Image 1 (cartoon, rainbow, N blue to C red):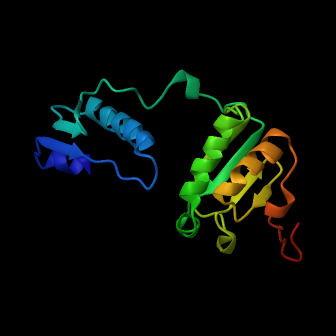
Image 2 (cartoon, rainbow, N blue to C red):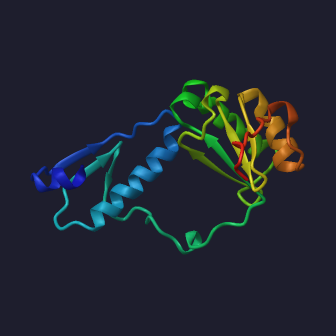
Length: 172
């Protein structure tokens, strides 16, 4: 969109972050992306983002620290597809992050990623923990501390939250 506005000769643009979650994350990344775009332009327009102007001096999109995959024991995928989001994935996400903080877990313990639809939607919000491939759902905010403490900290899957996996006959 910035490319189109720039090509049309627009001289000033105002960006507004939109998110169903805490805007702190969105503000950080929208500023970085806009700064990256700004650095690549000849005679870019003035870009206002909230109360500040984008100057091209924002943090870059790349870093040597992001060159390799981080070490972690578990990879937690939390579905943020439309049905899981409608069933409370935003609140579940916040509760899980709060449990990480409370139980002093870091990215070295659990790398968490929010995803698009994971299926099975009828059990949303759905989460899966790798490398074991343990599926959970529905995961409610009140379940977050147990999921984090029992499975991600202690390594014991939480039986009453687990979803059974079904393999189609003939598949391995």
